[in-house]
Image 1 (cartoon, rainbow, N blue to C red):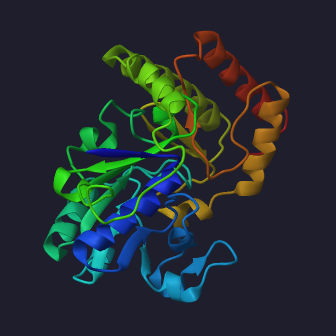
Image 2 (cartoon, rainbow, N blue to C red; image 1 turned 135 degrees about the horizontal axis):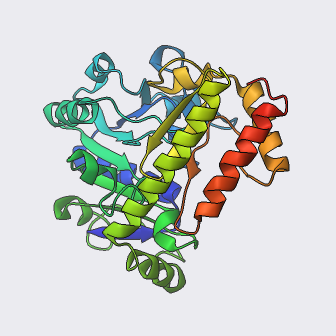
Length: 313
């Protein structure tokens, strides 16, 4: 069952409320660097021993109910115990740049939640309908207890959704006593726009996007290698991130060690050439069916010019 709201952040807020009601527990576990909207209890980074809010105005006792651990750290999953209501995760990290889960990590997370009686929330605001029609959970063959969706299901209009199995969702008002309401929930404009987009999603769309992204990333990798610039390009489906580091990235702390100043210089040079990359090392790039072969070629050419024009990397 699905309940529509107005954003991914609203979906996260309601999902956590639902998990606490279902389990009769209060603690939430999240991963350092994963973003789940402007939710007070989730606006925290750093690992558990050194966590801190990323905004002023968040009470400390609220954060006491949130535990933070590193992504892709199998040993850290021991923190999931019988005090935990839920674990919320981006199955593929997208808010420190693209960092995929290591083999077996999500399956081990699923096992840890099951053993502790905690619920598992997949935040698929970025990956849902983008990596596949069934999102990351289809690709990895795992089913969370609750799925969060956001802007991608609105065709550009503001929307969000949270959904899961019937025994959970029937606890949401008006059928149950877990409060959820909003003037624009289920907006007919946003849902109609989103439905129009979803109806166009064929397997051929995903194959085309993956092929385009692979070819673009390969071209950029060749240019970086020829120039002797230490870099990693993480790619999954039509999502990719250029990290200015020679090291493999497993989590948010690895991403924070990248050369952000050099990235900003590159971004500015590309922008001068008519190619827009997100103005942060910690953002993802996305290809769409609107990008043409000419767009890919121009991107590679401008990238090459930036390197030749004095960008030191």
